[in-house]
Length: 170
Ligand SMILES: [Zn+2]
Image 1 (spheres, helix red, strand yellow):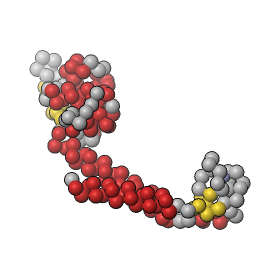
Image 2 (cartoon, helix red, strand yellow; image 1 turned 45 degrees about the vertical axis):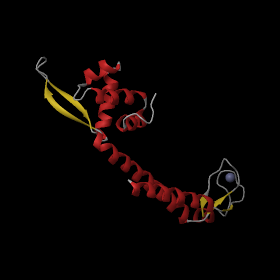
Image 3 (cartoon, rainbow, N blue to C red; image 1 turned 180 degrees about the vertical axis):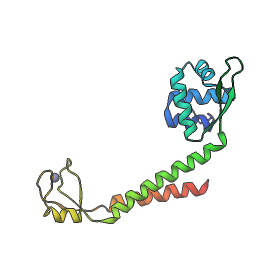
Image 4 (cartoon, protein in one colour; image 1 turned 180 degrees about the horizontal axis):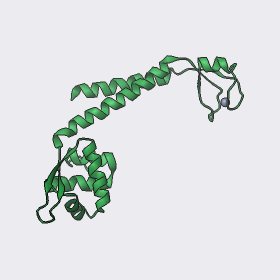
C-alpha cells in the first residue's frame, strides 16, 4: 500500500490517519489547488470524509486553503494545496512532544520510591501514599513492598537520549 518511495507528505498523512488520508494526500499531490468536491470524485471518498481529512491536515499546518469564488456557482470555495515544506517541521514537532512526554514520565519515576503488593491487577503507589495506607494495598489488602524501578528509569533515560540524538541530526 505504501512504501519508502512514497512522497514524505503522503507517508506522514497516512501515519496520521490511515487509508483515507493516504488517498487525499495522493490526490493533493496529483492535482494542486483542488476543491473538496474534486478530491472526493478523484478518490471515491465521501465528501464529508474528505472535508474531515482536509480540516485535520489544515489544523496541523500540512496543507493550505485558498478561498476563491467559483464563477459557475457564484459562491466561494476553498482550493487546497499540500505544504510539503512543512513535513519536516511537523515531524520535529511530534518528536519534541514525544520527548516531553517521556521526560514527564521519567521525572515521575525519579520523583519517589514506589511500593507494590506483587499482585498484577494492582497498581503501584508512591512512598507517601504507602505511608498513609500503612503499607497495605488499597485494592487487595496485601502488604506493600518497595518495588525497584531502576529498569524503567534506565529505559526512559535511554529513550529520551535516542530521540534527542535523532532530533539533533535533522
Ligand atoms: Zn494489591
